[in-house]
Each structure stands twice: as structure tokens, then as C-alpha cells.
Length: 205
Image (cartoon, rainbow, N blue to C red):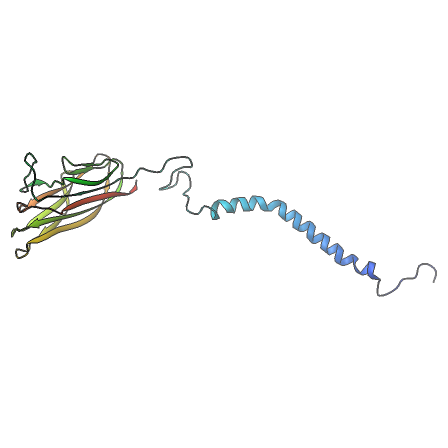
């Protein structure tokens, strides 16, 4: 037969042709895929790289560039047993006063009245610890929201020299709501040194 003689199996140049073509096709497919990946990766990065960031305008989150909600916290204690002359109540009724303010972030606690006024709408946590000293009477201390007694605590053991009425509560407050402690039963004529009243904003509403 005339013409070029063909050999089988094919030589090196022919045997490399098919794998080379497959390799080029794979590279082209990879390049095409790489061209679409940045868009997908950019979307994933917003979720994966910043999982703690709340969506703009979402519940509990501020939009980008906005300042976070203000911090609100207070803590007050009683550093001596009896009220100085001129203080109202004298440990017999009405508001319970605290003469030493340890924390007043946000300026919500008023030492003069012994009450906290909510600066922002939100859910707050409150805790009180009122000590009676050398007093055999039952003492009832109530945490007041404006004029409403929310919770009460009692100290009623007549055989101890010191006992505390202690409680805590979570409250939703509107701006201007007033929270205070009132003695609703008994007296604190023996003094209430080491008593404390504290609270803080958990989250705004």
C-alpha cells in the first residue's frame, strides 16, 4: 500500500496528544470556574468572617457606623448605721437611703432620693441587700417601680444580731421610670450599715 506507513502503537508524540488535550480542557474549566469564585467567596466572607455582627437594622444591632447603645449601671452602699441630721425617713419608714455611690454609669442613680431613674427604654436587672442590726422586729423591704411594689424581702429572725432582706428582679422600664427601695414594715433604728442597692441595663428595647 502506497503512502505513509502508520505504526501501532502510536509513537511518543501521538501518545502524549490525548493526555495533553485533557489537561488543557481541565485548566480551561478551572480558569472559567475561578472567574466566578470571587463573587461567591465575597458573599461567604460577610457571613463567615464577621459572624458576631448583627445585620444593619436588625434586632439588638446597630447599623454600620452607628454608636452602640449607652451603658447604664449603678451601685450604692450604706457606709454608716444612722442617717445624718436632715435626711428623710430616719430608718422608720419611706425610702431607704444610701450615702455612698460606687458606680453611676449613665447618671441614673440619685443619691438624694435613693432612687434610680431609667435613662433609656430596656430590660434592667436590680438587686438589693438591706441589713437590720440589733432589731427583733420583722423588716419588710420592697423594691418599688414608681408607686408599685414589685418584689419584697423579709428579715424576721429575732435571735440574730444582724440579718438581711435580699432579693433581685428583672424589669422592663421606660425612660423616666423610677425604681427605689422602701421600708414597708418594721424599722431600721439599729442601723443598716453594709446594705447595698444595684442595677444595670441588660439590653435596650
